[in-house]
Image 1: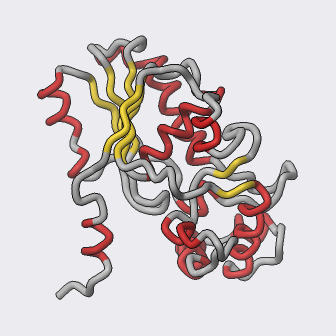
Image 2 (image 1 turned 60 degrees about the horizontal axis):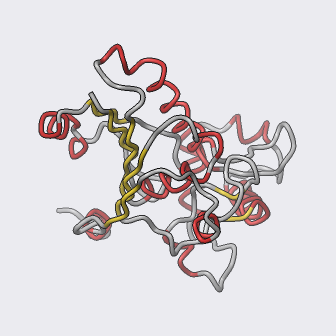
Length: 232
């Protein structure tokens, strides 16, 4: 059977592939496919960049998780009745941005065959390596660690990392690019996993020549609007 691999949205800081709204059984039964949902590291855990040295956090770990998911599919999906040569990746919001990144990353070239991008935020530029490092340095200060002190960061419990992540959310690397406020964490242009800005790659035709669909999700912002109000 054809395989559909779902990457959830959530601004690269929220969400999970096991959320009830992503229950793959409905889609599998309606389309006669094998549906895979997965998780990937989010926020600082998935995209923190502190430098370019061996001991630094170098970012794009969430993207690497997604690539590992696709490797797993290639190696194991036949045991579940799936066809490893008919893999469609699809996602919404941050998940669709992930699809765009995978379409421009050589590391994922042989791991899927077509894509569906739903409400892909192409208008929000991804951080360059230097911008990601500056943002990472701000995060490190909010975590009460010295710049570049990975030993200190690694010693922090998860709740302190999340607290620092929330504090740094008011920072913006480039005040001219206010859209950054809508996607502060996420893939960064490191010249390796992501060679250049996704939009630039698509403009220049430097992406994998695979069939893909771009569309929108109805009421995509409803979750964020709901979460902005106090609950009774």
